[in-house]
Image 1 (spheres, one colour):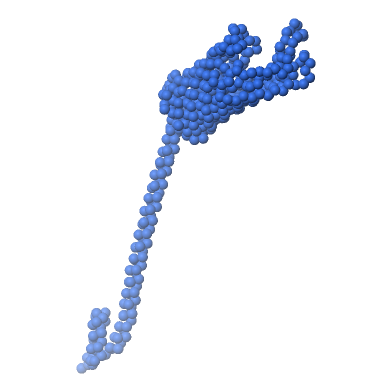
Image 2 (image 1 turned 90 degrees about the horizontal axis):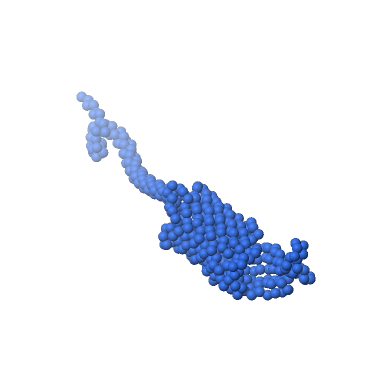
Length: 427
């Protein structure tokens, strides 16, 4: 009887059982196919080793992928935080930009006060470059309560006049007996000053101005009718403290519907400079008299009340001023001298290009009545002083402005040119 060899399937055994079975079959008559079984087992062992190596590689790659995932998540979270911070900062800037016009308006009200800032000859006359930027909702134009403004300034003026002096008697229009003196006068004046302006309340301010004046005159004279063949040239100069000015301003109303703003002004000038009656004169030729020193003051007390009107209409500001100057008489060697009162008017327009730059154009005119000596009027002492003023203003910072103005004389009695630079600083 022939026994058939069993059909073994190695996949039904563990590796250890496979080895045991191979040993048993090799020593048994039933070892049919044992060598084949061993040969078949070798490829399976290599396959499992390869699988194990691949499994280890997958685990390592999985760990690396996990690390990369964590790094990507960290970078993403950081970028989100950065974008969130940038968005918050941008929103804050937009809010600050939106609040800027309102804050700028408040600062203009609190810091820009030079309404009615005076030119040298009229302390209450409006100067266009001094007008602040106003809006329909602005209710105050003077120095804010508790605010101090120091304003250094420097001015230069030039005057060139040709005059005829008559010290003679005229019998008929074609016959004059006496001295006829033809003079050419060139006058240079430099004025440096420092003023302090303080706001007592939101509608009331006081101002103190101390000037220092330097003057230089060059006169060329040619007396005729007395046989003088050469011109007389005489130079004179003078410098020192000028007349101190004390002023106060009060805002009369607070418009709520965009109407005009009215400001009352009062300026007093104290004669602290060298008086014209204190300088000495010399005579070069008969009838030709020249001063040896130039005065730096007026020699009398002056009080000048005025009223200012300001009307704001975007982007411009209209303004005007009416004034009356009372000049007190003084007793001098020549007798009782009454300098004569004055009346003035000025008006103009200021236009703002942006929040920091503006220009203005205005006109000022003052009429001075005749002077008197011992109640006798002096012929030729009546004056008309008219000036066209061009102003420029630049806001250098929140506390500092730069103002420049040019005045051009349009009448014979006015200075030919006057240039003024101001630098108000708010504290």
